[in-house]
Amino acid sequence: MNENRFQLSRKEFADKLGISTDNLKKKMKRGHYQSSYIKRDGKYYFAVQEAVRPNQDLSLGTNVPRKRNRGNHFKGKYPNRAFQEKNELRMLAKLKHNVDPEVQDLLPEAVELAKQKKRERLQSALNEPVRTKNYGMGIFSMSNPGYGSKQYLSPVAHNLEPNKFRKTNRGSTRTRKLYW
Image (cartoon, rainbow, N blue to C red; front, side, top):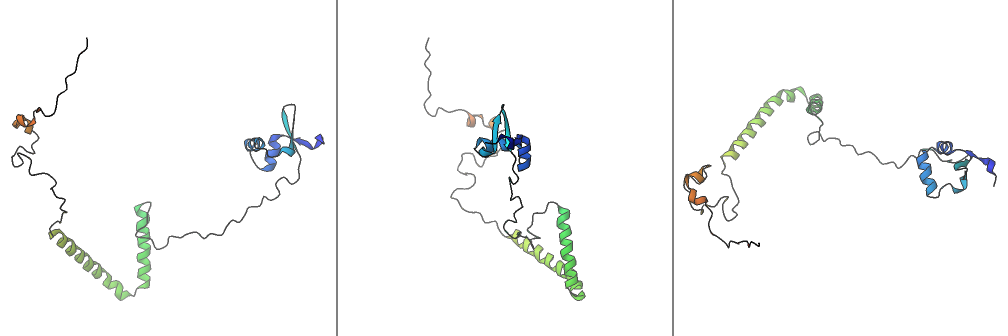
């Protein structure tokens, strides 16, 4: 083997490949470039090669069209309110140029009419009784003793009816055996 052709240091060879020295070390551990280097006096020397990496052109990749999100002004996630208002002004300006002046004059009346209908719809919804689902029992049980009393929901009920909140002898009590 001709040792004169092994002249490049590890750093020079990595620079020629266009990779870092750490990346070159890892590749050497995995068995790459075995015929391209020798170890002499504890140092690695690499062979001078003219075309180490001949195909270095950037690939064009696949031609995947970028998905545009056009027309999503009302459901879009705007980063701030100013951006949303700017888009709304642009839409309004576009409408003004596409609509004849007579329709533009009628537009404020149409907006007021729409607001009035919305108010009426909301008012009729408020007058409707609220329909709750019947899950069997109510949200609270009216069968609790003392439900109708003033003290039932009072924050000082324990002062007004102390017997209601005392411990009862329900269940077995366990006595601990003491070993001396």
